Length: 561
Ligand code: GLC
Image (cartoon, rainbow, N blue to C red; front, side):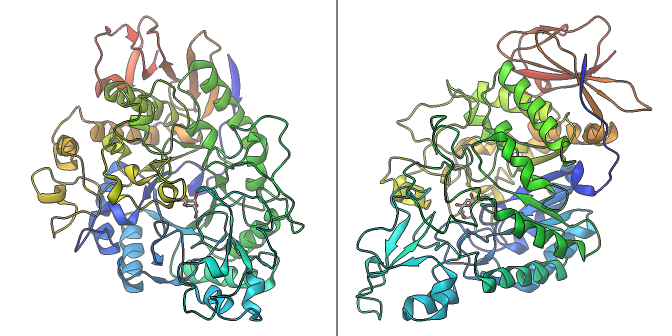
């Protein structure tokens, strides 16, 4: 038995919180087929009843929606498709009433090309706003950098679709966009950019936001000498797939980003109530993650090593031990994340022949996951992660075991990755399909209009919230029970030991209660010790034929002795 994490004595709320990610376009609508803030407010009790402590809202700012709202035109306004600022205030008030904290998504790496700064920069090559972005005069693209979504990371002003007949029709300068051309990268060396974002932080903190999820936190600062770097940096997994001898990238994970987060930490600390900063950083060296969560920087970072880990004993054991050790070394909680709006849903990803990060979307002619296996493994992985110390992120619909939508027609796709890879990647639309609330209503109750911006698969009828609430053995009721037990047993703040068995076996301890054993079985069943009292088993929802004396393959059991 080896202790791999000591019980946590600090009590900031985010250290052991269950945080539920809401993707506003697809959670619930109060009107037409696109989700909105009033819709979210009206369905928030679902999240509170699940046992979550906070919500993280993906962007709902004014935006042309070229990248699902991650292209912000005005950081202080709500996009009319989602409502208005008053709706945002009501949402925050209702969440607080229900005991839910609210984490807002901040997108500081780039603005939308419709942001007033970029519009001013486009209109006049001598405008001071040019310096707020990365404009360069050159015959060719200034570097060989690749956009995360495919193709070059540079676009010539005159090549923009809106150039014809515009004042910038003959402007051959280039601008940098690590994502879509509609998302020009900001120049964080400019004081105006820094001032603007601290002011934006204050704006939302004043409105009652309890924290921020920081989009592309590893991207803000670039090496100003702009050296070439031909490698593709992948969404979520970063440079994991690159050969080991590839040099560090000049556009990602530059040391200068940490000064920015120190500045922001100081702003948040002026407010009461443990406001939190959460880093979305895709790094190639897992040891780099801890740098973002040193005590004077962010509060926590998404654990993408856990998300991208193959569903295998050795990999899980290593990633769990490493994450706890690294985060503990700087006093930050570990997070346990399995899905978000950027990856194939866990219930499908885990059903592929090769588990791990998975492809960027799945179409009918690509390998189809085994739905039962995927669901079982996703539940097992959730039951494992939920027993571990630290905090949990759950993406809307995971509690329903929703699979990826794999039959979406290409004409309905919106993800820029689909277009920029010329269809080589399906992209992320399949994990962003509106939630099924009521089985017997049109669009499964997603909107009063009976429509949804992406069609929901017919099979989701059986997965609708109302159906699952009525079924004791449903995935939804399993998650509710799991989070209730996690809270009652203080699993998020407990000590954790690796029992050093030939299978995955941890022991969670906290004074005043029995030790809780956590066992995950992968391909082979694991025998349970005599007298084991089962507290929770992911097999309750996805029953197998294995008897009670064993942890069935692809499941997790919590027990006491
Ligand atoms: C983040 C978001 C993703 C978005 C990208 C660019 O990774 O999670 O959805 O496309 O940033 O803003």
